[in-house]
Image (cartoon, helix red, strand yellow):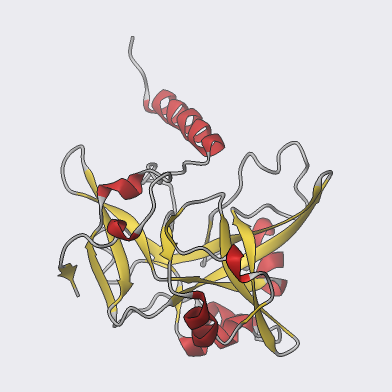
Length: 262
């Protein structure tokens, strides 16, 4: 029996849906997928609070260092309100506020394209009113290293400083309560990222981070914040293959080899 490309694509989508429901998301559909699909945040909480000048209003034991954060899990987000920045945990995978209860969890969006975030119906409300920062120590992407093999790569700051992704969030009210969720914005890859993949999460500098959280920021200025840029301190090295399963965690995932680029 012969299969056409549409048949193969349909089967791939079904398999991806099965993977999504298990909570073990992997970014395999490279032709259409977005990054970031995995990242880590393991900086000590006290240092994190000091670096980002945030108020951590939840019990400190809720913060657990993680080296392999996957979609559908709870992630730390930073928001600004009345002149102060606060940190909270939300679900990674944006659920629109208007989603129906029977479909809300079937197609959560983990990434949003910066080029269309201000225009698409799903994103323009959160872009206008619910912008957030998502701190990370770095992120992963898979590089093709053979005809059938891919190698996980760890992208991070050379000074091991916490970076912040541009994010948007949403509040969904369902029959069992309220769920707050988020998505990471992506842009075209810079020169270091492009050999591995053609997209990357939007990493904001300190100045742009402040603007991104400003509720009064001008729309055109916000779009300028999302413009693709070189990340001068960006480095990349091979990561441990264990990162391929969301069940695996620990510092060994990023303690792999010497820097390959940068």
